[in-house]
Image (cartoon, rainbow, N blue to C red; front, top):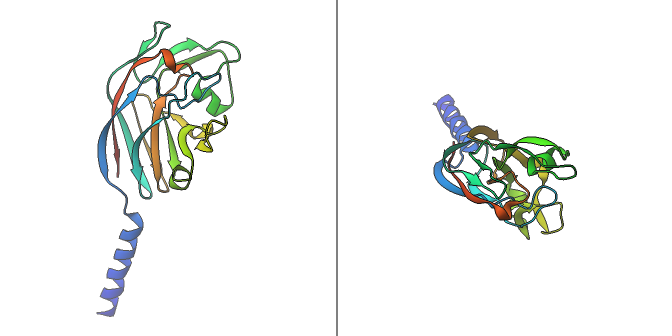
Length: 184
């Protein structure tokens, strides 16, 4: 009897530690949402919150439909397009890696940033570049990652996934991407 109670208590304890928010949602990510990342950046449009998890989880983002267009004739899906950003300019994913200039193969691609709850709930938080002085607390560029047509990744803490577009000149963009986002 005692060993059964101990086993049951252990099962309940383990279950408590692995409980996360489950769910799925469809999100629209407008083509002009760049989070003020990249250099130079022309508009301060915060990244879109996609899903919040309460603890360790596996998050899946899957492209459903849509394209992003801009004034330079780019009309692309979530994997982005090849483009020369020029010397001295950088797209958001280049900023995340600390590089700039030249050809990239993911202009206007779908990108994300997972932000831990401690940062996302801090007073003054805005889902924009936290290094440019436009917000008291923001997203650090090294949190940005490529999503494209889809990505599954694990997180080890509570937080929120934000989505955006890999372009520093978003004011001339149109369209956007519909994606499903789920957590387990």
